[in-house]
Amino acid sequence: MSKRQRLTAKLCKQLKPPEVGEIWIPDTIIKGFGIRLWGGKTKGKSFAIRLNDRSGKTVRISIGQAQYMSLRIARKLAAWEINRIKPPRKLKQKPLSTKEKILAEWKLKTEEISLDQLANLSIEVKKLSAKSSHYLNETLKRYYLFLPKDLGKRLLKTLSADEIFSVVSILNNRPGQQRNLRTFLVFMLSIAFQISSNFRQLYFDFKNYKIEPYRESHNDFGQSYTLEAKHFDELFKILKKEKVFTQQANFIQLLFWTGIPSRPSRLLKSKWEEFGILSRSRYPRLYKPEVVIWQPKQRSEFKTYARQRHLSDGAKEFLLQIKDRNELEFPGSPYVFPSKSAKGGYM
Image (cartoon, rainbow, N blue to C red; front, side, top):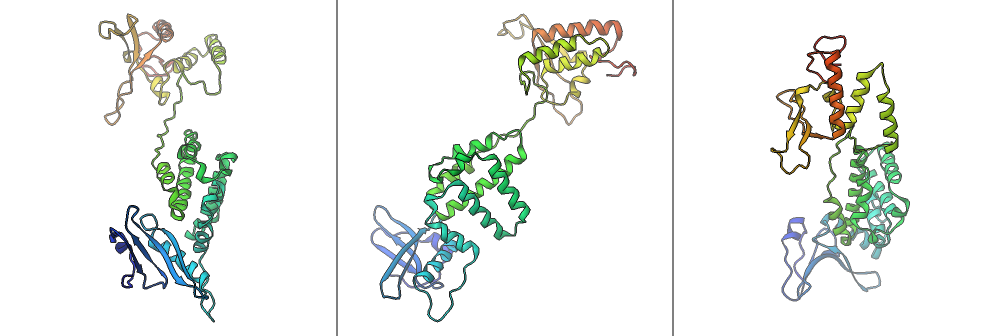
């Protein structure tokens, strides 16, 4: 046994296990608490308790491995265990804080804890950091809203990081909810890791997952949203029959043909010089002899050029129809959708 000394986080980190044998370093703050170092093939170090109970029997309890548990939490758990094993005589037992009770009560239950139980435990821990009741209610409500019931009832030790992250990944179209749910799940798994080092790998695997940034696509013709292909055909038939608001109908059709991943105003302000034809000599791998492209021009020095859009044969024929009509109604206008009221402007 080594000399009793005050344990610190820096000291615990610097201590190295012996090649053979065992070293016990008792703490000066809490009697019976200390750090155990052992050698051999499975050498390591862990926080532990060594003391005699009221009947004189020696009690030895391991709290957790030193490299995975903080000294602060180990001390609190040790104090609770020592008071339980050997309560002070003629003195009232010092009441534990809420966090101490939570960690101590769940320490032995962690292996059998479900994801829903871990969520409730995490909310109890969050209450200690002066979070508002509204924030806590919204956090727990969000958890139960998006997490499937069958997944929440499963034991944490049977779950993988992929299964938990699949719940977060389906919320790509709701980035705010996705970010808040992921933050709470990371906090939940960190609580499980603090209590038991068995969940170390699960915690780091989930934490290392990255959320893809959300890019909203308003007008991608390849996306049907809530419309099926037959409904798009019906929509195009209605737009082709329009005789009064011809320009507006043409604009909506071309919007779908181009599939712009940005504001529709780009297409509304587009000019004929932005559309061009690439010959096969320039791009020999293209099967067709010529391909129509649309390259929106740079609007200011701080904005970059948009990506080239290769248009289909249907879009090419539709552009030729618009150009023939514009030559009759708006001769000399550089815009694809010229304005009827303002001279030289766009619709």
